[in-house]
Length: 313
Image (cartoon, rainbow, N blue to C red; front, side, top):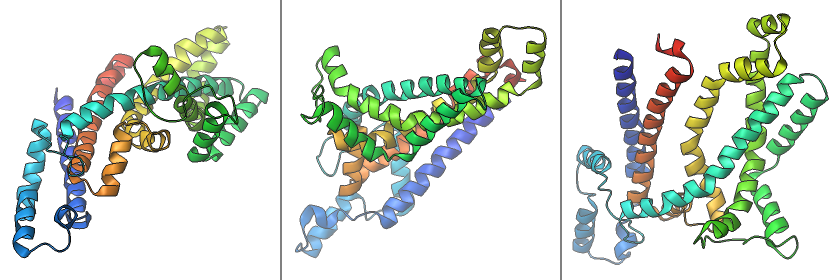
């Protein structure tokens, strides 16, 4: 119980720290929306009225307290650029990004685990060397180059021309597959190298432990060693990597993919907010991302206890 309370306290402190630093940077270094809204030839009275409406005339701590209240109540205001309520914008864009990114994220991790196991099991032999070459090759190619290559190969008359090159006109499962296939393949290609290198190192370390050598000495089948010892004992770091990668993939990974594929998800909305200085959207994305990290940390701790009872001791 004390451990759970400590984790929750650390989570609250993390949210406060992230939100405070991000809010401080946006206040002191972010764009001033006053002249964007009323132009440069406005009178002093008009400037004062707009700054009052935007809350710029309030003390810093009062504005920060208001920001925390908005996060706690999900009363996130409206976008300065479009006027759309931020909560409605998130409700519209986040599901699109999840539908877009999760297939590639899951496939990239599953393929990385499979290749990592293959390399670790055949360490120093041709299988290990082949997987290593594949990983290094995938890691050395720019994400942007991969996106353009898959677009040309699969979505233009210069290639197979099988899938839409841009957009997100999804109205069913078939159309979903049409629009998600190329981004998924690009994401898998880019992430599989990093995932494979991580999982290979993890499994090589596990294969080298005493209990694996003991199991082999007693004649345990290789399949039993793989499933009961190597994979089972590696689940805690696997779960950690997967769980803590989700917010990064959904936000930062979708930013590039959605921009180049013209998909209206949270990544593209964040990019547009950055370029236009749309502070209500930026504050909501940063603050809620910190909250999601804390929730994921809590869920991960619970999964640890299920996967390895020793963690609860």
